[in-house]
Image (cartoon, rainbow over all chains, first blue to last red; front, side, top):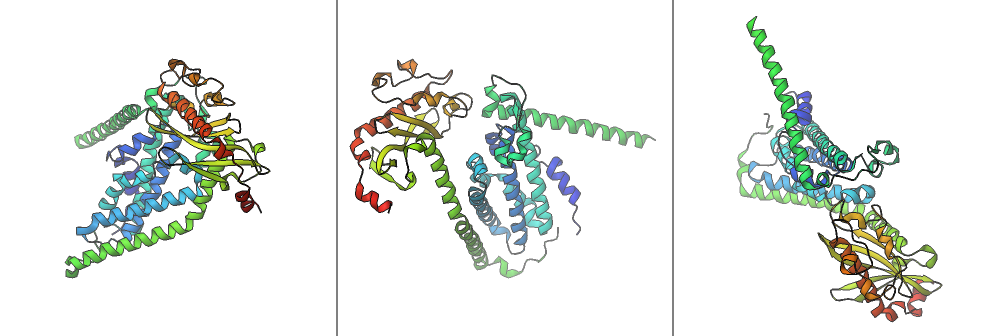
Length: 225
Length: 216
């Protein structure tokens, strides 16, 4: 069976995006996205966990029986997340200070168990790793988009403190759009997260509806000729 | 979907399922043990660096020539033990740093404060809190200079009655839309000073024997 990597990529980033299509992982999404930098950090950590869990679970897929698969997946995912937490605390300490609270939350991120169940346990190792990577990047995209919108509306900055996360060389990402902005508190609080998620979702649906209409129109004209 | 191997009958047995779960648990624990062993030292080092950095913010470096992290004293307070980091200059205790906790709008606000021999505040910093961003988080030095307002104050200066936010008749500013947070911080600093004053003699005792053991 050949693996359709393009399909996996498209699914992960857009068509079957963890947040905007599967509507999973909303809790960490709303909790961390008060700034784009936090979103990027949690997104990258989640991506890493998704790739690792996809790899390990695909590797063991032949010996795992359907009866005990859920406890086995949970065990493996929890172990991977704990390892990531320890490694980040030891070697990426500055980032860990910002995201430390949210790393253990990745265990409860149902998107990871969801991908293990729906994809990694049925596909070869390479495809599972690719799926983890793309789903993770799709999640990161959603987190950064949401964090960016909330940060711009809430504090009029974008990627504030990015150099703490990515190193000094990425300091150029930090932008202040309006100096002396009084702040829009609602956006920094969880309700702002709900609101922005809603608008982004509506935006995606609209884009898709418009594209869908164009496709049907094209098909209709083709059928007419 | 290619499932690879079919489904041989032994896989239906309870023993296989149990062995599988046990084996996975063993695998996961082994990975965790390896991870713990290889990161433990680095994590302890990072924690000590963090602590040292926050101690350096509340006790000026020119007040001590010892390693404050290694020179601690723990005293029982109401709920448990309170740890004091002593700053010494040529063996004489010049200042101490300790944690104090206030309860704000959403849970504990952990502060570290430095106090000199005379009971004057050298500095207060927030270690961790979960106050509302944009309102209560102005207790952080990165957001506002408010926390510096405690510097050089002591329990006699201002008088005890003034150790409160302005709304309660004291001298400390509250924030627009957030009174509970600064009230908790003022209360915690005041409680820290009261504890220091009550145990001043024990905290500042020079303990020559203990000192000679530590600095050969």
